[in-house]
Image (cartoon, rainbow, N blue to C red; front, side, top):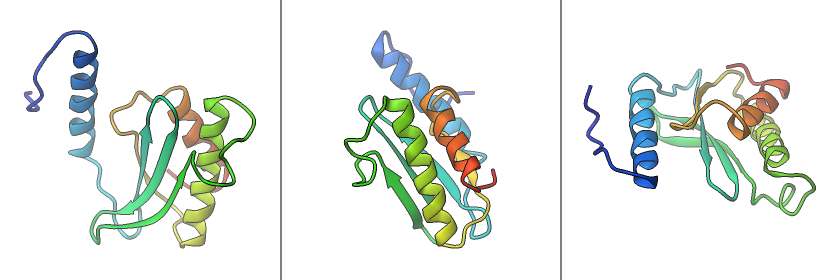
Length: 127
């Protein structure tokens, strides 16, 4: 099962492993008009989420840790991820989206990724 990512050592190995996971996930996940894809992008500093219709190639809703309502708020990065999840769910509902396909982007479903997903579910999005 070669995915076209070379094996390396140290931090490069971690990046290569994440790239392999991302390729493996994206082979099976695609967003449609009925169930767009909720993409989560995580960095060391923050988190971003987008709701994308892959057929049209349009972003229907998005939220980031840099949004004015979230930026500079109280709490750690986990609390920030919860706010981003609730905000993207609110914006997706306003755009007429009820259900999504969750794309964790090669990240493990734990910590901030799980916090964002749980907050989006609590706000009314169906996965």
